[in-house]
Length: 310
Image (tube, rainbow, N blue to C red; front, side):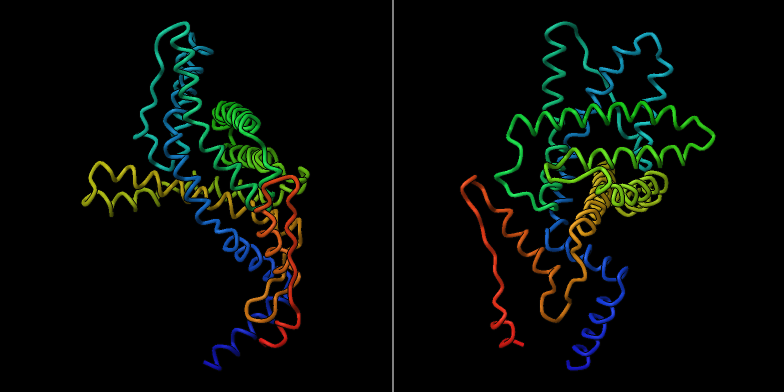
């Protein structure tokens, strides 16, 4: 037991001295402190159930705008399907049919069903940035932000079609994903941050998500191979959920990079007394629970208590 403690203290000392290693550990610990694995699961859950209503709205609107160009419609839909790591062929994207008021009502209800994933992302971003609940947007503002973000994603899907036909399609997709991540990390939180503050995490997210879109088919095929015999048709659902959950984890880890860098939340302590970075994270987690304008949570650390326990 003593040997394990000695090794742990040695590792702790090294990571506090090495800035890059300390930063990486700071991001991983912040992810754990925020229970971000559960946040990623929440995002994946809403993404799965929002996916089909949103694709329905997207295809219907696309059908109106490009009603005389079916070839371009098909190329855009294929591009959207290709973003799901080998599962695109399983996503049957239909259209809402009808005209006038009935069609508008159908689009509105599909849109409302689809904004759940953006709402979940807003909640996750505010959590990792430590935004007190009293400062978070109200019902109407949060949904307005969600609609704006969905519009941006819709434009990005169309742009992805043009990019995929360029000689350097992979590079174009990478830059597009980085751009989407920059906008998402800035728009989906009310934290007081700048565009430059979200750039490091956006670059990481853009690279990782592009690789996931490109090579995620290997993961999906492996999942389906192991699940087909047991779950049959539901294996596609398992593969899609696995793909979405991995993407959600990547996104939140990337957001944590921005928070740790912006607030200098490293080095963190592994075995010894809390560092200033530890104290700042603990304080942020407590102040998140402020719910009223007249509520002010104060956090203090008893140094004498730590000395006695050590």
